[in-house]
Image 1 (cartoon, each protein chain N blue to C red):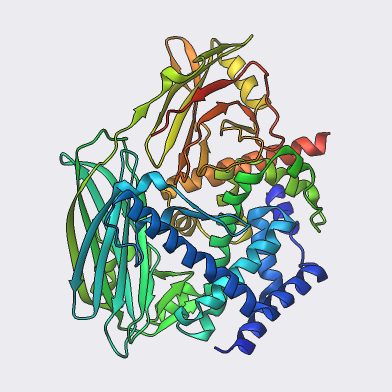
Image 2: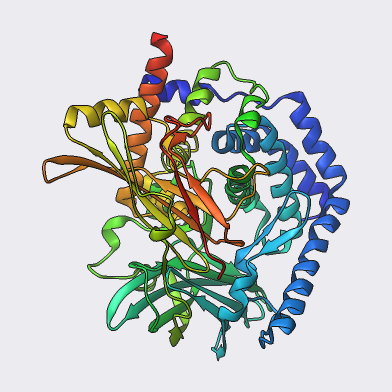
Length: 391
Length: 156
């Protein structure tokens, strides 16, 4: 535990300069707020213009799925993936309940992910409502995606609304076809006093014992043993008398997979690099309009060589090396292997990198195993160069 | 809540906001931006705050989301030159931050959320949209890696 104690002790109160910065921020809040709202207007305008040019009948005047995949540079400029515009599938479903209305706006579904946008309105004049949602995705009756909201969202009475949505990765990646999607919204109202506690609070059990409904962080707390087998959280909340259900919407959708997965392994300058004690193999690289994914294997003849390699490259990453301007293509995540595996007498360490929410596909990338901290390559010869065709 | 009350509550929380941002970003300069951006977002969305006594939790949630955005922005801009020019962090134990920076992000984020912020594995899983078992494994791996990195520093 020594390292954990050091971790906790490493954090000290903020400097006087930081306090002055916060005070200045508060003093200038009106100006900062205006700066922030202006680019949003620009986003809508740009989306509208490009939608018209593309001849796509986007209902972009309201919140929509493209709002998820925008990025604002520190200089205020807005970037988004124009290639996605033809992939937007309008839904336009409005469901009216006793307590809330749900509007599903539109969706994007390529071979790697599905994004969906909605708005929920509270119709009750004087009661706040809580919203839970979940979704399941199938292709040919096989589950390929799932998502749910474990935190609780609430809507204020008298027209409180929330714009929301989800991006879910599809597993495995898909080649065209249609998806069956089921989206469920459950609208609840509290039956007990709601007590909000800090995330670090230790009062939860006591408050639950007193019959209170406890919101910790943004999640309603229930003793784990109060769940029945296969019971959802919303069902448990109603059964235990914490909430009453006002509305439940189950919305079936059929969405097209508007783009397949493009394998570009053959566009790599090479797929294998030999070193003294291992081989580095580019096993796969493929992309969709929203996602670029590749896998690199390190293959060893002996387990001892692999162990030494892991020790030497403890901080290794295989995310792409960006160009000189530091251009950023999307949200990159590099997955280190949880466990090596043995096959045909050799040991394999598999690394995967997935870049999601791409707003501009790079024209080429270099995959260079490097130290995540220093950005220095471990071996000058270990490099794959891949050109990516325009979509 | 009026502006005066908003300011009063933020000023009381300043140290804590700084700690949370620093735990995730490990970079003093980025903390300035993240906290400022979080405060602006909070002020703009103040009408979604149900009751004033929930202000602290509500604001921290916004800050954590802003720090995640900050990490993505840094991924765009981070170069070896920038890394070398990181400003010094006011800490009694700079080696800890040096070690934190070396941890892969998928280990570092659950580690700081769990040990520095005190969230349990279920809460971390909710925040990171990962299975609980994955979060537990990553916390375990992160702790091991941190121990190894700090041990290595001690030896050298």
